[in-house]
Image (cartoon, rainbow, N blue to C red):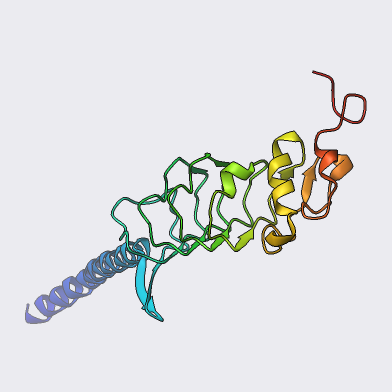
Length: 214
């Protein structure tokens, strides 16, 4: 009887081992999920830091679709590269009165409202390259009195009448660091031409010279 009892006890212990391991694995998975969630929460937060006496807010690679209201307003540099921003509404950045540089490259921007950059009187650098912008006017992008560097390349610019004022402003000699390397994607007749070098009169050809009559 003692032998039988010992064997039964051994079998029970062995059968319990996988269940115990399963529970441990479940606990491990739960802990792993907790760590993953902690990492996700951490990466969704922007990083704020000081450099050379100026305040930076680094919000790159955060899957953001817009500007957050709780961000500090006294920043000098706002890094928003590689997010999911598609539209910039009027006064999007108006609370950032001290902003000197704004990096919006590698988003999904296709529309910028006319007053999107209103209030940025200190802005010297605006990076909009690698987006989906097709058209813009001088009033959209260049109402900034301190702007010295504007990057617009790798956007699918539609070189027609709506781009006329922007192209003419970019070609002013004093604006030599504005819009370098940006090229037309449409129409086919102007594809590949640089906005800084093209003939502005080609943007609005007269009827019969490449534009369909109204």
